[in-house]
Amino acid sequence: MDETQFLVIAAVVLGAAILVLAIGVVITLRVQQRSVHQAARRAVEEERSRSALQFDLRPKGGRKPRPAAGEEPNAPRQQPRKPRAAAKAKGRQPEVDTAELRERETAVLRQESTLSGERDQLAAERTRLDQLAHDLAHRATTLAASEEAHREQLSRLAGTTPAQARAELRAQVEREERLHSAQLAREIEAEARQTGESRAREIIVGAIQRLAADQTAESVIVTVPLPGDEMKGRIIGREGRNIRAFEQVTGVNVMIDDTPESVLLSCFDPVRRETARLTLTELVADGRIHPARIEEVHARSQRRIEELCQRAAEDALLEMGITDLDPGLIPYIGALKYRTSYGQNVLGHLVECGHIAAMMAAELGLDVAVCRRAAFLHDIGKALTHEAEGSHAAVGADLARRHGEHPDIVHAIAAHHNEIEPKTVEAVLVQAADAISGSRPGARRESLEIYVKRLQRLEEIARSHAGVDKVFAMQAGREVRVMVAPDQVSDAESQAIAREIAKEVEGELTYPGSIKVTVVRESRAVALAR
Image (cartoon, rainbow, N blue to C red; front, side, top):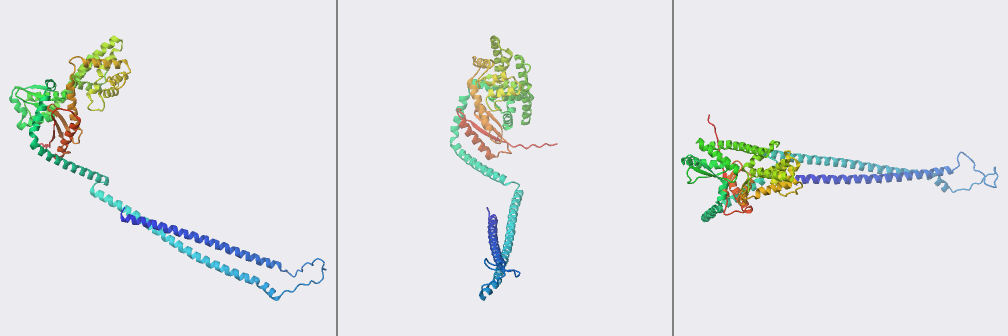
């Protein structure tokens, strides 16, 4: 509260107190005046009553008094003599009482005049106090309006509100502290890099050796044939420009070694890996390899992969004999063509479960079509588990419910991992078919599934930060490449993001060796000459 507001409030309180005091004085004077008037009236009435009584006791009009008992009517009545002084006093008594009454009336009138003057004075004082209070209230209103106008003018000149200004100041302080901490971390890392570079090289080599297992390499690496070894140089490009652009666009690691007429593409995501393979195959066949061409061919390969997924879903539905499936579910089923669970292809697993459930339903005398349909759709949630929260069973049940599937099929999908208690025979049969398909010899590889989940979690951790555009887990999980938006993240903030991602990975994941976090901030300027 500033000084002006304090003075205004004090003046209002003082005026109110003076007004209350003046009203109290007026009320007291009025009560006293009423009491004096009543006393004067009572005195006047008593004097008048006494005078009237005295005059009534004297004989009127020469009327003779009645004779007393034993007297003759015509006998002369002897009246006692009264002293002259008493007679004179009796004759002067009314005059004395009237003079005293007049004096009292004069005193009362004088007191009334005095009270009337005091009342007028108090009324004038009250009017003055009311005017003062009105002036103070007007000043307070004017000051409040002036202060509000001043704030609005400041906000208009600054182009922001007080709340926004406080938020911007808080954000600015936080940004400065983050930049300061990033700078400090960079200095510490530079100092540590001078003495620990050799040790870091040993750790990275050890991690590569431990993770380069044959089973993993066969699952996450695809070979692309080349017409000749000179094509490797064109894939690399001048100073590595083409290969960097290819890896940045596709999110796939390109390994070019001494193997003649071939390159290797490595990625844990089968959809991304297949898209990169089609892209590189078309680029090699066309012969024109540069960053703009890579982006164009990659977009076309993505559309082709979508067509292949659509065709795979239609083939699987035809094999299962399902013709009334909602069209909205077909893209999710097609996406499972490139999904694996513990090394087992998910779409193939669904087809296998459908056949097993149909055979067991026929043996048990159950509805074959319902059991086959429920077993075929039980893992459909794996197509969008990374997009929706919850387990793939709950997500798949919700997806089937939204696309009009029967409640029994929805329940079988939700209960196939005992997340809810199965209440129908079809749900128990789906559990049995899933267990049979997954436990057969050579169906799954648990180590591969753990490896894939770790890579997916790496990308999720990096993608959770503000300003991140794309994230790719590469080099079999030994490197995470993070593409940030250049208009949202500065160079110093890129270093801070890399540090934060590394700390989260250290706290959440278990992995051999070390993981390199690379944050890439790239600005492009494109102009068209016509």
